[in-house]
Image (cartoon, rainbow, N blue to C red; front, side, top):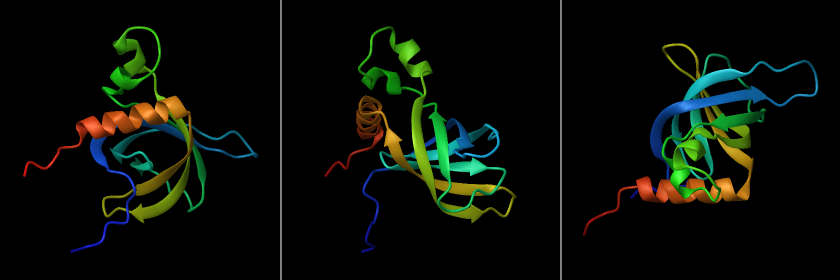
Length: 131
């Protein structure tokens, strides 16, 4: 039986994420991309350019359906439109055969209420074993 090192359950998404490097020099360019999966610990995203291990990124993650779990006022549709904003760190970089890169990004800083809403959303989207 293989040992699973992941602390959080991942769910496939295929939704959008905007990200940019956090840097003290120059003006970082914002990039729009697709993230392939998300968990309470981070996400896997596609990037046209390589970002070295350890790079810090500002992330604006669009998660369809997570608005039901947020602690805020207003219609759910408005809450769904609000992205999860986080600071993440590139933990894995893999060059793809088709060009571009996959980046494994670990969440370092997420607003606590947003993180809690994300965990509840993922729990609800995860299939359970029927024994």
